[in-house]
Image 1 (cartoon, one colour):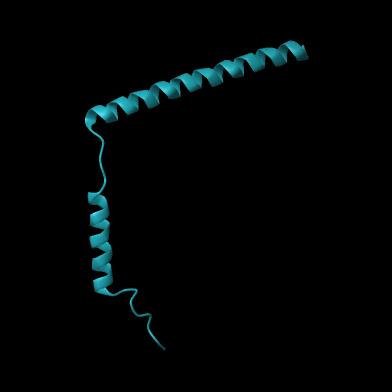
Image 2 (image 1 turned 120 degrees about the horizontal axis):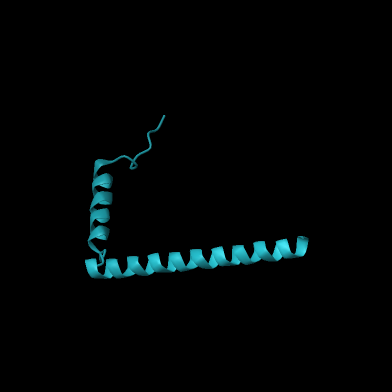
Length: 69
């Protein structure tokens, strides 16, 4: 039987890890200030969306109870 050549070669693994390291070096991480600002915006939007959904739910509940009896 023939072995699958090239898939487990140490040089290919080393090359893959070197390329991975190079890609990680290209990442631009946000500053603490930018991260805090974006997290605050996400939190506020989540709260507002939750309140909107709760309001629609209450209106539908009230509307259906008015219609049904």
